[in-house]
Image (cartoon, rainbow, N blue to C red; front, side):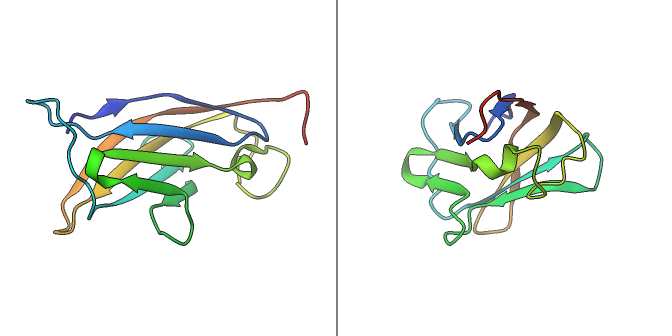
Length: 127
């Protein structure tokens, strides 16, 4: 799998779904990730060990959906994650951060699927 560099813009108070594809670098065919798990961690900067937000493919949480047979990872950013005026995520005045998305195979092999910046845009209407 090739590392994907993808920047994500979240609008304050709005849900967002972001898709990532797992493809073979040689054939460009989808990679079956049915038995894999995923974790996405957000930090204020690359190398900063303090995690601001962590999303997982835990089936009960429904934060990352694995569509394994076609190699799709869908990350769901709930609107509370981008609400800068609540304590649900400790953004501490940040309007941007960085993330890594890591897949783990059933054998424990970890692969970084994607990384990039997350920007949060203020909204004039908060519902």
